[in-house]
Length: 117
Length: 113
Image (cartoon, each protein chain N blue to C red):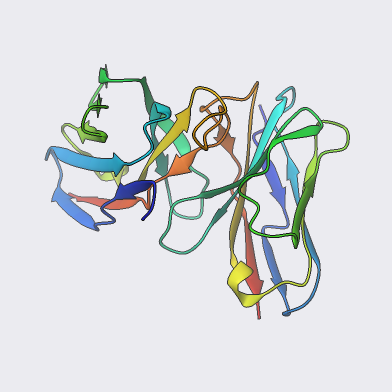
């Protein structure tokens, strides 16, 4: 079983829809939770991050972390065609413990999102 | 400013050959990371450097894989006796110090025939 599980989709929504992306994980040593966005033939770029449990909002994007359930989510409001990409959840530990380290990111499989006009 | 650059962008080789993949990090970034991304999968951690030393090499799959960063800037990922299963996009990233916000290059697409 993988440490981080993410529904690969693909997900296709109309412009303006609310999108919900989710990941579950098994390693309780993870402390930092991130969402990266990857366009075709490009490297991933950091979209948002959250430390420990809680919510974080940035414009149309909201990230949620529930450490008790080992579940994280990314919500995209008023989705746009330019949001079409692969969304990757990623996690890291705060120290070298439990198979984690500051610099080692563990990614989910990625969810392919298409927002059509 | 310039981002992370990787060369070559594409590499086709034959099974059993040796390959080197190069990464030029963002100037001033002390941490450098290597990941491997297979088709339809998320990036898989291989190794990261803090300065010249490997801080965590727990992701290297076997002793055919080796990486160096002799002067704390450019890094080279070396793969010996390539196998077809090594075919993937090899991503390099860098950051000012070891942390989760990593700046990725476009990757080197390796194909082993």
